[in-house]
Image (cartoon, rainbow, N blue to C red; front, side, top):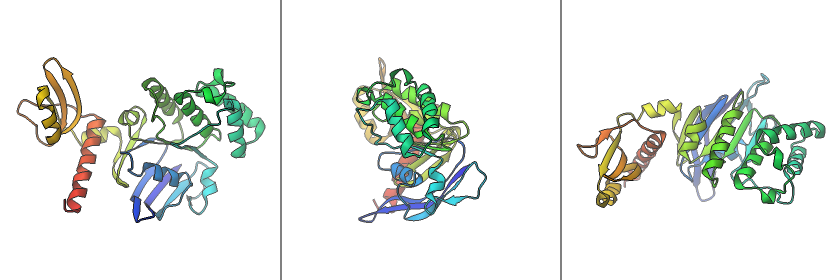
Length: 304
């Protein structure tokens, strides 16, 4: 199976372009779409989920059934039949319990009631909600609601699972549980995870696509992104009094206060000081490097 995004652009009123000439191929595995808020992630998700249409370009889907690729704008039902979608603003009916809610969602998806009942029981076990399946959803925590959201997205055993900012607002423990769940679900399906949280991408993704201002910056396996910034990350210790000036002058990915001063990770082509030492990069370092480079190119193009 394969999802091919070819030159997709999306324009909104006021000549606002949320996506510009975005191209990407997705195959089974977990692809993390990473970028800052407003980068165009949710717009792309809505296009792939057949909720909105692109202004330019096309998206084609080749399912596991061996049929020829189909344009999802012209034949959306072909993809919808094998699609699972958890939007960023996923909501629940507070007076329903988990079983009632999933039965309702299964009916909306047109699933057979008897088969859906069996599937719901299985999914509640998978997302670890079986023991609270009769509790009204109004009493669920944020993490429990997100896991229920994954359950509804999996009702039709989708070949393509789209999850938009699933861990936003979750506490660290709930985020770890959710990331582990996504990794377990990959198997022989395409999982597309949209996030601005680098640790989520690092923990779950087999491939990462960086998006900025509606454009694809980089795409590849995490180790390939890391290789691209080797030799560009520096560990530097400075007094606390110099931190503010350092932040103005250098691209800093992290700070940690210690007894001997503030330990900085600085991303740049040259060391910030003769006593700075090169260290192995993290995905956070790589992300900041590519975003900063894109911002610099944009400023130069605008004459700033």
